[in-house]
Amino acid sequence: MSNNADIAPQNSGPLPFGSAGPRHVAIIMDGNGRWAQARGRPRLFGHHAGAKRVREVVEACPKLGIEYLTIFAFSTENWKRTQTEVAGLMNLFRRYISKEISALATENVRVRFIGDRLRLDAKLVKLMDDLEVETEENDGTHLTVALNYGGRDEVARATKRLARDVADGHLNPDHVDEETLPRYLDTCVLPDPDLVIRTSGEARISNFLLWQSAYSEYEFIDTLWPDFTAAELGRLCERFGQRDRRFGTVKT
Image (cartoon, rainbow, N blue to C red; front, side):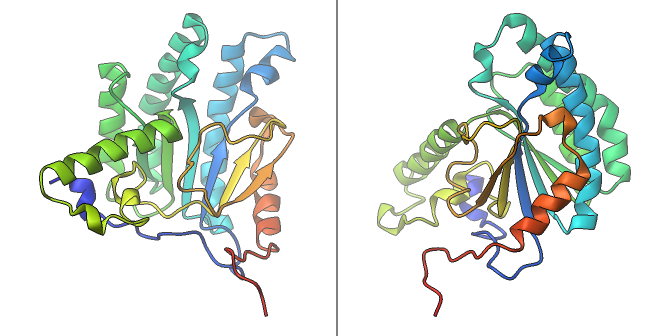
């Protein structure tokens, strides 16, 4: 039987209205290329600047009450970029993980990766596996990195695993409901995001956490990712706490 079938999400939905701030924040880190081009530099220069920004945001999470942070690092659609940019990004991921592994462990950050690892090179996958193992006992901020991730791809892979369990007789199809599929998603051990932020002024979700963000609050901001700060994250969290989240109900 698939291991995912036995794992229930820690929290099947986002936080209700009245919470001080978001427990789980997800970020679409957009604008690295434009940030670099505005400075007359190659796009990879912007990606390196964006990678450095991640550390500041992770370090700010405990002070803001954010327990879970999910960042969109590389999508299944990003393979369509130039070979030079893709190769540069893969090299950046390897260098970043190698450099940050000890710091993240020391700062009590628990790291997970979501996405399809089959297309990634073996060296990068080993680094990802090692970082997950190195930090698996940490109980501070839960940092999830979406790498070669796409929401539709995730649902397709989850559906295959679910169908396999049905075919093998481990799952009764009559018992499948809206709580079943989440147990097969990459995020099966994570709560749904309360707040999804997209930087760079684009107002679209780009195939990110499609199932999980059904009731998330969204913030589309003009700031390019390399210019995003902990202070801006704090302002967005404060604004989140002022929203009236009804989840389809009517207040009486």
